[in-house]
Length: 79
Image (cartoon, rainbow, N blue to C red; front, side):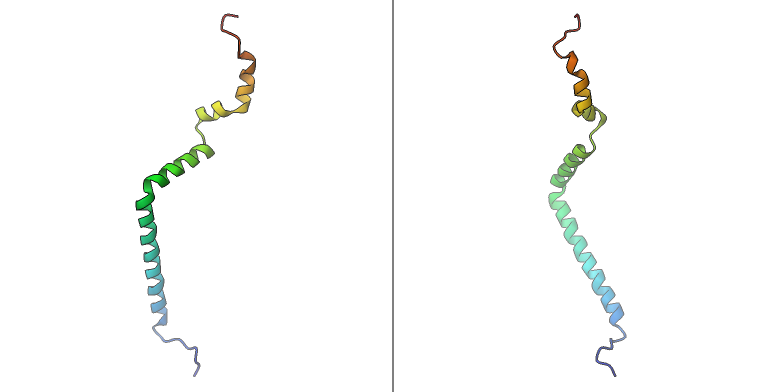
């Protein structure tokens, strides 16, 4: 008889332990989201706007557009 033989109900017990751990982690994550929800949403929106700007923002910040407009600075529309 081996000392390391597991009891027949051990497989079900470890499944229940993993399920309880998963439930605990889920509750903690949901609590964090409820507490920091608006701040987290604002932060993610700011990051995504920097990474993926809209077309208007991309054109305004584009160095190619600014360099192509450079000769027109200082001229008025009648000259």
